[in-house]
Image 1 (cartoon, rainbow, N blue to C red):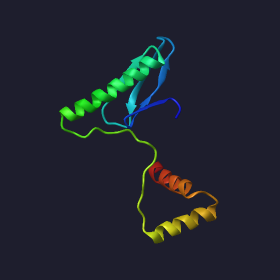
Image 2 (cartoon, helix red, strand yellow):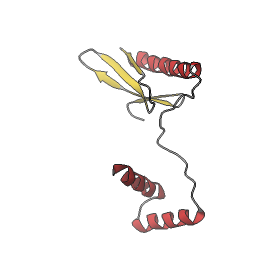
Image 3 (tube, rainbow, N blue to C red):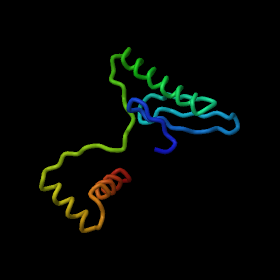
Image 4 (tube, rainbow, N blue to C red):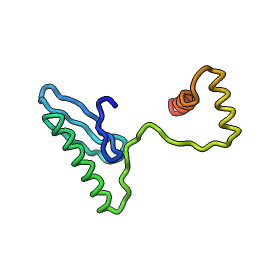
Length: 111
C-alpha cells in the first residue's frame, strides 16, 4: 500500500510538510480525530503505533469497542440464484465479478 501505515488493523495516512520538514498523518476510517507526527519515517511510524495503542486504551477505558480502519475488502452473502445472475451479467460485460460489484456499489454511493 502506498502512503499509508498499517498496525493492528488501523490505517494511518502519511503526509510530508516541506516547510516544517515534518511527516504527519491521522488514523483513517475512525470517528475520532487521532493524529501523529515525526521528523523521520521511523519516528512517524513509532508515533502512529503509539497513537493506535492509546486509541485502543482510551476505548477500553470508556468501555467501547475500538473502531478499526477500513481494509477495502468485505464478504457478502447472497442467495445462490443472485450470485449466479450477477456472475453471468459480469461475464457478459467482460469484467470480473469483483469489478462488477465495485462498479455497482460505486454507482449507488455516488448518487
